[in-house]
Amino acid sequence: MNFKNIFFTIIICCFFVGTYPVLAYVASSGNYRIQSDSVDSSGGLESSANYKEDSSVGEIATGEGASATYKLKAGYQQMQETYISVSTPTDVTMSPAIGGISGGTGNGSTAWTILTDNPAGYTLSIKASSSPALQSGSNSFLDYTLIASSTPDYNWSVISTGSEFGFTPEGNDIIQKYKDNGSSCNVGILDTVDKCWYNFLTSDETVAQSFVPNHPSGTATNVKFRAESGNSHLQIEGTYQAIITATVIAN
Image (cartoon, rainbow, N blue to C red; front, side, top):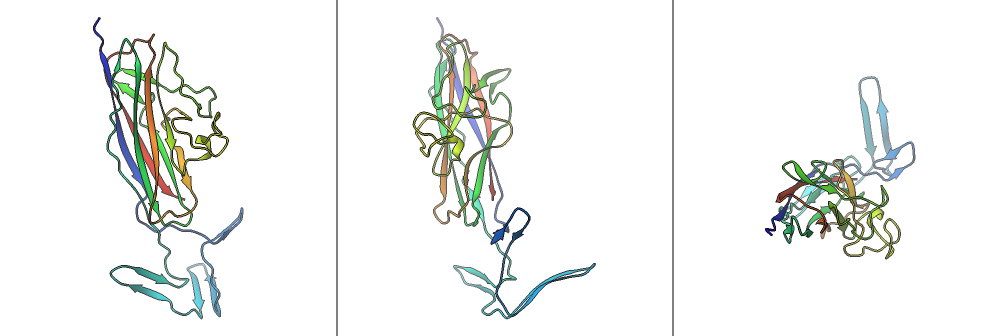
């Protein structure tokens, strides 16, 4: 019997909000946010039908200073600037190749490292370009089937007559949904290796989030991919590809 192999490639794309002003705030409620405050002798917000003016009187040591190694903008009226960056990993070739008749499991992974000095942190989301995500021409692996529609499966499980594709994120900043207590997901504080599997969506799925800056070391989130064809399932041979886009924004 001639066993035809199935190969996998994950095309990685990145989109992020690059170096640009990000507004933080020092106080807020359900109705307002105060971006900055200042203790001085005078000043305030004045407005008319034609203008708005925000002034501050009595501050000291204000202005812009710079050298070859730093740039300082001091004073309440200075622009608040932060930056955010994300690494661009290479495409992923999942392995091993699996038999179209005999079935098997292919695995791969990639990591995005996010670096930001934004006081409010960042959010990392991923999505697939198509549904199902993993395709070869008109053939495909089904997106991973969940036991519960909104909660990741603690253990990966595919029926012998099916073929499916999914992922799990790992890292210090993964959201609660992908944490576990040693037996279930979306509970506990653990990040158990190769647990809490989910299906790709064509809309952004948040996988990691932080509400504090991580400069200068950054934080990596590793996304593991898995495709399985059951031993009683005939999957047409070919090179199956999924295009996965990661989006990083400043909170």
